[in-house]
Length: 456
Ligand SMILES: [Zn+2]
Image 1 (cartoon, rainbow, N blue to C red):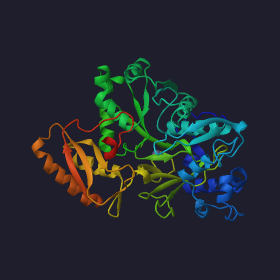
Image 2: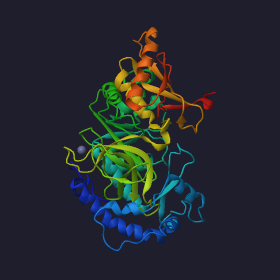
Image 3: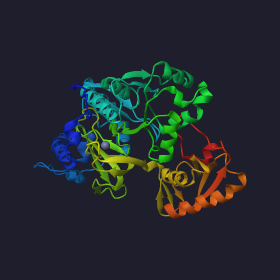
Image 4: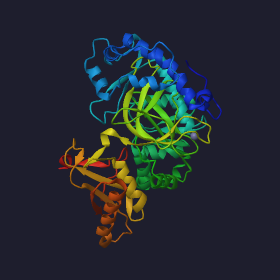
């Protein structure tokens, strides 16, 4: 299925511009066959779908999925632990080994890594779909793209590299070299586009000059693509990166190794990421607590759930991504019809103060949207133990003063932040304002939550 690379505005005009309900009906017709075949292909789904009635008519929407079971990360992990000889990817491996051409690893940031597999056809689908996401985010065939991921086996490694080349862009795989060599190579290769985490882009704005003696804006980049963590949703962080690099092109992308390396990409409107995997993945929005399907409409919040209805090697049915998203728009000036979203956080990151759920990113958002004149856009929340989720006492929170703020003013700023968090999020925090430079900066993903027992 090596498809021709489109040259126009859209990558897949038919499905990108058809009404969203029509796209879902188009997917539903294919999903029925996928679901019907699953028990015969994967023993994991044979058990799970045992009691499910087989549909005989063609549904016109994805609502029939609501009757089917979810798959969660632990299901896949257990499926892999029970792997039989010849099926290293677990009981959801859907084809024999002689058809599998690549193993992909999860990053392993939330426990043991899991592995996924691709057949030659899956590989074509990934390459073409991920290239389409980058196309939506503005990467073109005349770009030289710096690829900074150092691990080929993760979803953002070789699969992204394949997609850049499929798009016709020039792949400059610099990941793995020391920072100084990477930064010196960017202008030398006339690199025009760079993809990195929001943390790394912010880190470069602050530290490029320390490493190579010139500023981030002198690297010569024109397009920045951010991914891998929430952060670019916040205007203060976007603005800092745009100004620091002297560019006007900053787009966000998002994917998930278990499903497809990259599925969401931000268009020129810059107001959220469009779903770009219409031809191969169905996405539902569900209430994270009840699992009930929610309608795609502006302002809706929920967890993204994915079904990979063309996947051969390791298919997933209603996979709970744990990514909480907010729909920022339906319909768009760019002509694409798929929902636009921002990711607000992951289930694993959620904290509970009394009975209120709160994401660390929401706390950061309040701090930087109201107090960026006096504190830096970085926070540190302390947990006592790694597994702590509930807080019965105010949440310990450190923020970092900007150099202009006199130390005598720290306590007053701390009390104002506490009051604002109480008003905006109904949570109590115990805020400490720290001196400039006191909070750690890391170059890949900057954690917002730290664990005291690990730091001792
Ligand atoms: Zn758009």
